[in-house]
Length: 77
Image (cartoon, rainbow, N blue to C red; front, side):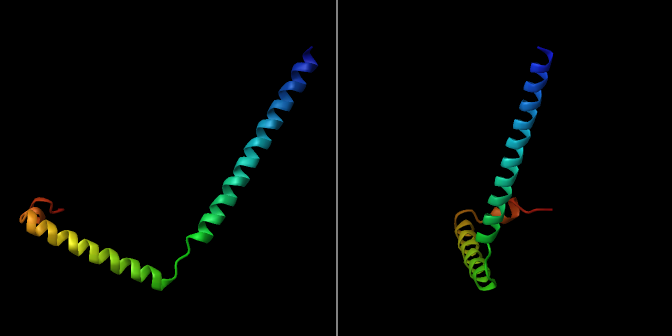
């Protein structure tokens, strides 16, 4: 009976180690595929930055029209 408990313990530890190893390998593979898909060239980043700058300018002009003193109230020190 003692050897049976020992064998069950060893099998449980091996299965948990194998499961952990498979999950880590799968996670690493997902990170690599995400990194490969998230590569932007400089022109795309420049276009996105320009678009975001235009959006910020539009939002600030709307705030200036609606709440004239919003800049003074939300000034960061």
